[in-house]
Length: 592
Image 1 (spheres, helix red, strand yellow):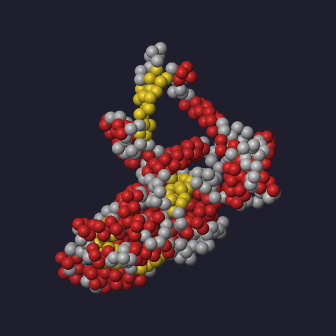
Image 2: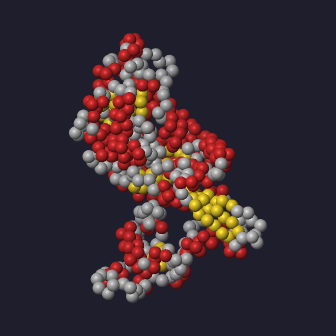
Image 3: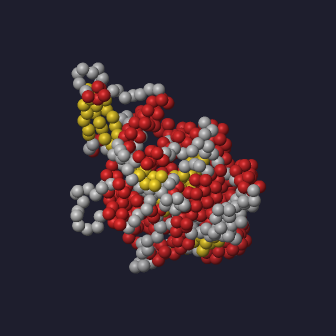
């Protein structure tokens, strides 16, 4: 509950007085398990007080009633027809092939009717997992489509926009013409076809490599990218895996498998799956900017998987190129790219160097364009008092198959979505957010994170920490953190991210341990819960009540009136033999 529902790894962040509620608290073994968890995950100076709600079974219903009262005060109208109407209400439920939704595959029809004494006509209520499934005709479906289009225009989703634009063809740099050698090899290079997997850090650097190849005379149409990740594609290649890393690394097998399958229909000359060693970074005073070792080694692990029994690359007649690249040292990067492509493209050093310079320029232009757009959206949020959400995650979390569609669900609720890697870096904005810290001597520049994290060697971790500081200082932004199961780097910084956001008094939402499983219903419940808290935060923001109002808490008098977990007696149905969890806890002298 604490980890997967509330997303809390340190129970002390919730306070020192904890009230357990819900019908499951009648089960003493559940109480014992929760007490043990609180003991293990409470990292605070105080000793926590744990009590069980006196009406634990009805607590949720009481909360729903209080929320209804609050909504009644704000809306001043209710659609509830009354209990007398409900006594006369009849209904029937249908859920079969005739009710199946083509979009979410899950839909239920509820036919409502009343007896003859009521003038109310029969009515159909549709329960579905998507808005399109709640419609019955094409006109309503078109209205929903139009509403979504208008929403995308007014509240952009930069995570989705970047994921789409990253892979678009890149033109030659303005004023740049092909070298005489490149022109002489135009016919040869026009025949070269290169497959590139849509994975990992390429979600940040795809424009750079697209521009590199285009500036060497390779047509953009000859660059074939794999599709976005899906569960179906992942399952097709799952059997090739010999190791069990994080899901973003495992899914790379499916992308290479897709490119190999593509070779059967449209042959490729090479599959280019680069091994990032060091990445670029706008941050300053960092120890390093290294890529994740697991992600960096993934191309080699994929190569081993497709070499294990049969050489799939030789069978498909394609070269597999996976050079180690250092993006932070341009001269070294030029040498690495030249060594990789000189034979296949018949390169000379000069044209390779010019193509690399043009590639970095294209990458800078891509980022500058997005940062300019995000600044405009951020200024609009400040002007209107609205809220935007910032994805704290790695570049590959732009992949809709890896972010579980979480940001699509949030975007449909009207929230603009920002990406941590494309936040604006305008001097006036950074001075407003980080100027006081610089004057206080805490940091040396707005792009310095050494005040909160000394081990600044991992590029993606550094960027996530800096983005958390940015969000914590901007009233109109809320963070949504994504992390994958088995992500070693995030295991070290997740607690730090929580502390940075908590210091600002703002809510922080996280989806951790994401993997190949996509629990759609659970995600939607989490998103609805987030939407509820965000609405209250927005009201605080508009009323200038942010941070100054203490969080509601149970008073000590109310807490003392609640039964302590130790006061529960052993129920008769408990076995008389064997260790009892509550008795064992008492014998161990559990102190809370």
